[in-house]
Image 1 (tube, rainbow, N blue to C red):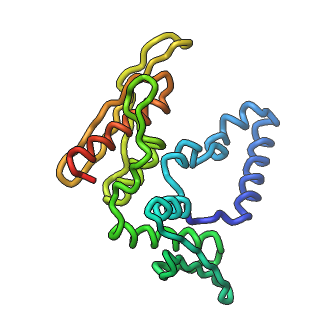
Image 2 (image 1 turned 180 degrees about the horizontal axis):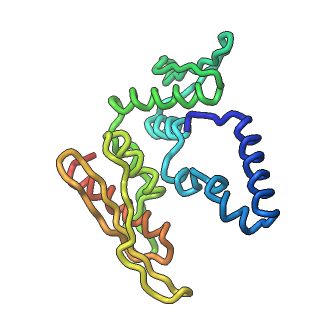
Image 3 (image 1 turned 135 degrees about the horizontal axis):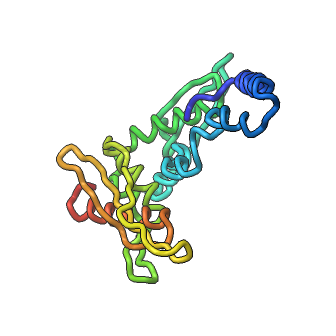
Length: 216
């Protein structure tokens, strides 16, 4: 995200927790039942995996296209300004009270400009065939998310269509669905022992289908 929470929020949460703790008679179990919704993460590690960070994505795209990226930052009074240069040419600039936010905004702006110049297929290299003969794209979930962002499509939606086996020998098949302006596309992946791998398989096959049908 591009919003940094103020430090006072920590004090507010601590005060609320303390007040509830006293109110429930210093019972930790009751406290947790009441306040866990506040303390549980809003953004999970899985969310972060599915959403490539703009700065990292910018460097990866430019590197794959043989372009050099430089992000220069400077302070102008209370504002920090970040300038993104690609092969020495200024392509985007952004300002914020916070240095990191300025850098993030500038990277996002640069990606929007570059998407008109670079093909979406830039995001879907590094394909390989797994040891079981199945088609795979490295970091397929992240790359499919990025493709949808570049094409301005809604983000991919994953669902488990098969969940079989014992706890020691689970097998999963996951489907991924994306909505394009012309049609809603769905693709099921290969059978995998982990949900994460099943989702990556579905994303890999969706990427290949998008290539074959000239969507990207």
